[in-house]
Length: 396
Image (cartoon, rainbow, N blue to C red; front, top):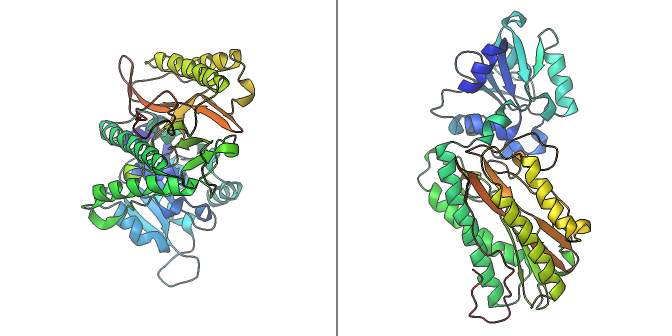
């Protein structure tokens, strides 16, 4: 809040209107159901109005009012509500609440997250503030979120351990006997939910849910070319390779973690081994570049160069990594053409991957950029464990 207010003062702004759901959560603690698409203006406005001076205002529909009050308790944030019908003592003019809070148009420019808004929302704010000076503040809060504070770093260390524990539980389940992809996902989901619930037992107001909102990506056999394939009802067979992705799973307090692994129910072919060796080389090069001052673009170019030289270009389907935190994809992007340099306090994933029918090779871990290098937040095997070779062989 202080950083936004300092920027408003520097740029002659009266207020900033935050409408991107993860940014509202970051600033206020209010999140959850309102991340759903139907809350996009103009149907139901959820907006945090940060003035140049003083406490902010959170505007929510009446149906979310009690939740918003509980979520923001103790923050100094004022909460006001609007309705979708005519009722004495209530208002249908949600943007009118913002106008009244900000004051007259002469107060200064009103910044808003224009690039993150739907076309309907842009039209609505233009109509509501037609006599004000509107300015684009897109990316302000996203940039602040790049550098994690001490509390977030501590939380993400614990999230990383939970992701690894989830992987270990799923490997053990695969060793125990045949199961379907969704059953494998449920093994991990149950572990995460129970651990998150334990953390939340003493939470005041019971605002957060341990259940999360994500669906784990699990693919096997002919589905391996679908890098974003949610766990299906397919039965994992003894000749299958299995890819497990942990990025979409919300961990402690809803924070995310970048981690992905591949295991095999059968011995790998020589070609598959060569492919994974090339991916491992690319991964090691990327990890070796993780230090403050390294251009994000150069990491991606170096990884892509190794994969292409290894003849794998046709199976490369995404960039090398991205920021991780409240969202599973945050700034900075680790990809070509991005101007960002790594900074201490960033949390990023490194994930060179190959996806094709019948086989995938993926090593993904999340790292905290430190003052002189990087600290891994997730650990585990870089090789592809063969689970069927012996029940006593560890996957670690």
